[in-house]
Structures are given as C-alpha cells and as structure tokens.
Amino acid sequence: MTVRPTPLQERLREIFERRDRDNMQPTIDAFLALLDENPADPDVLYEVGGSYDTAGQEQLAAGYYERALAGLDGDTVRRCLIQYGSTLRNLDRMDDSLRVFRQARERFPDSAAVRVFEALTLHASGRTDLSMARMLELVADHLRTPEILRYEAAIRGNAEFLAGPPAHHRE
Image 1 (tube, rainbow, N blue to C red):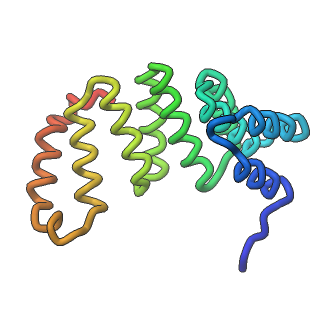
Image 2 (cartoon, rainbow, N blue to C red; image 1 turned 180 degrees about the horizontal axis):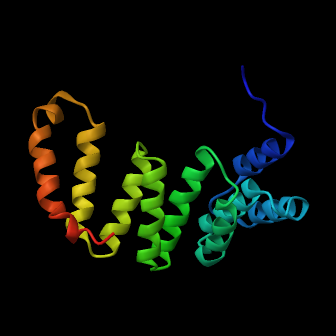
C-alpha cells in the first residue's frame, strides 16, 4: 500500500524542487510563508532551516533545526540531525556538533551519511586520527569490492590503531 503525501508535504516538495541553490531567497520566502500558515509544523521548520543553511545563514538555520527536531520522525530526523550537526560544525561549535552526531549514530547506526559527516566534524575539531579511523571503518563496512575485502582485516586494523584506546576518543 502506497502512502499518499499530504497537501502540506506536496507543497514542501514543490518548493524544494523549485529551489535555486545560487538564489535561495525565493525558497526561503516560500517556506516562511508556509511557516506562517503552519507555525508549529516540524517538517516546515526543518525545511526553513535547510533553506537558510543552503543560503549560508547557519546561525538562523540552527534555531529552526533545534525547533524541528522535537517533532520530526522517520528519515526526516536523520536528515535534520546530519544537517544540524554540520551547521554546528560550520559555526565552530564542535562539541555540540559531535553530540548531535553521537545522537544520530545511536538512532541510525547503519547510516553511512551520519558517519561521513561525523568524521568531517572530528577532522575539523583536530581529531584527525579518529576521523580517518571512522572513514576506514566506513570503507570496510560499505565498500564490498574484491580488492577491499582482500584487505579488510588490514583496513580495520589500521582503523583500530588510529582510533587508539577508547579513552582517547573524547566524543
């Protein structure tokens, strides 16, 4: 059985599909108008945050992401956590970003995207060895080519070495 999108979901999709990443103001305006009609809707809050984020207005985006997270569900939560964590990284709020990615990893342990963006925050926060370890783990877990499989033990061993003892992870 196919679940049909609600009229609000259709409007959100239409606005998103019309966006111009080089000129986000019309998209921001359209989402803000929709927010005026639906002031507490978490999906609308998330899209407003995303449009500000794409426009490079991370400080504004963060507030909308925070408000949206309380009411989101499903895959939208995962996307919001990734975008919010990345926004916090861009705002140089590394500990907050890592906290968000830790939460995302707990909720979505199989998400490769969560792990990639967490690794970017680890790198940006100066934890380059742990960042590389996480990327190597991601390669070993998801890149299942004959060549990678041949060296999987070595890749995982290097990841363990780079990650060091758990006390050094400081997440």
